[in-house]
Length: 432
Image (tube, rainbow, N blue to C red; front, top):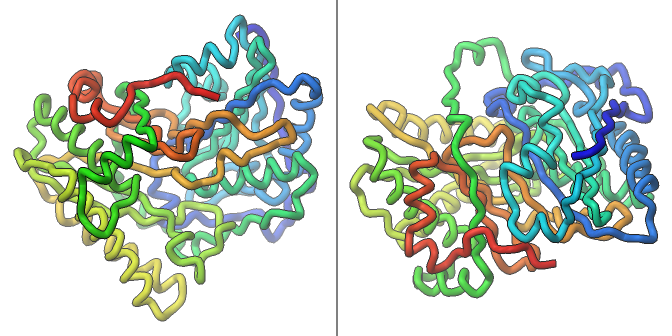
């Protein structure tokens, strides 16, 4: 990196006094101290000067923060002080690296250390739950291509919130802000607001360590995997990939750990589950986590796991359909089920939790700021959390890219698993 500039971007209009405090929900408060991030890669458009692109990004970000005002504020205990303190925008020039050379072998460490703005916040976990709540970094390659790294505090935003923010920001940059819905900060309409009693709750904190590697499942390989499952109804691609990944992770972990219980959990976006109650423009952690358990030395079959994943999804659907009350009543039921599921393994002498989060079908590839759509998108959390896997669409929209984070010891075994390698390619070049 040869050159870098840092600027604080404030909302173009001051936040109204009546909107100055945003209560966190119970789920918001219990979120891990990390940033949710997306890194979008764009080819060079020689007809648009770099200075024009940068200025458009900063100006439109300021305008977008007027409606996404909590991200210009600061977390203060159980609420966000929407004080217009601002978000951080960083512009950087990369040395001799070109976009094509970087994408020939994408590296997770390079993305987090170079292309994301995390160097601005050395104490990343602490910053993610205080300030800044939004950090952006535009990095320009030697060829003129650009990466746009966007980090949002997970206390305020899940992946769907990040996607909604990018959608509105891009539309604003194109001068089309009127074509997208305005954000709604009403997470406490489904989950109750956080209270002082939560401060005594011990939060299970995954290790902030490990190594992250990328495995790509092509569309044709996913079809082969679906055929292997061979059970009606036809499984989704996410279910199949998740089942295979969990089987291979557990096989690797069985060689290195004495943990008696392994738990697979999957956060689900509630907006798509109950559109009649929750708008797609709702910002916050509007998620519900389903859990699947596996005992030590228990064979983990792909077919059985797909069946369990389907059953958990059906349980959530039934719970939603049976609700004839308000969103708040449904939220209470969902919290009750979550605590009930958690109690099934919380008293075990030892357990490990493995998360698979799917960002598939979210419109990150539609983020056109006036210079075309991105040729590649990657997303995760930072700092990285061990035993967490992120699933994203491949840029041909047929395959799935899995970013798997494990301990170094487990990864050595995992990445050599022949069953995994029969369906996934380890970090192939990004074709664009």
